[in-house]
Length: 33
Image (tube, rainbow, N blue to C red; front, side):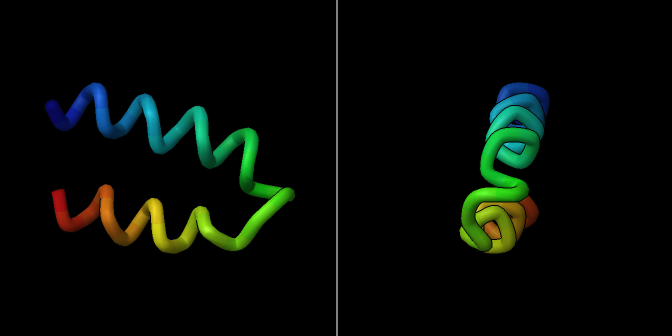
C-alpha cells in the first residue's frame, strides 16, 4: 500500500508540483496513510 501511495504521490507531485499547491495536501494525506 505504501509503495502504491508513494508512486501516486510522486507522479502527482511531478505533474502538479508547478501547477497547484494541492501537492502539500496530497503529501499530508500520504504522510498520514
